[in-house]
Length: 128
Image 1: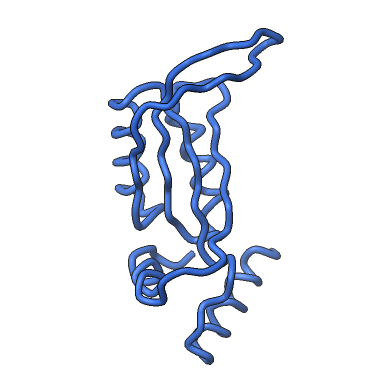
Image 2: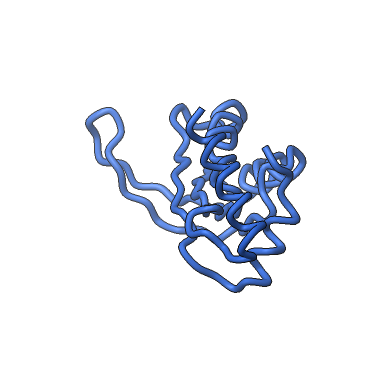
């Protein structure tokens, strides 16, 4: 109930004041095994209208512990710009289509940004 109430409150405040409220939108980070998987997941996210924009960043090296062992790999990073209220749905959807047993889907709220860009985000992502 709280996310719905928060979303409605933010929409009302924004409509009345015309100003952006910190945290209305977020950037989600999703790591993928290779470029093809990254493109497939990015397209699937866009097709479901869970984001306004997805960056596909080139290979990066990763070190992590998995089942008690230190692992090293290369991964492709997706930066997903979306409504904060969509993060739960986005995370569940990515988990259902991602080949990793435990896909990384973490997010950070957007504190500030270009008003025109933030308005574009608002217009590009359907309401809950």
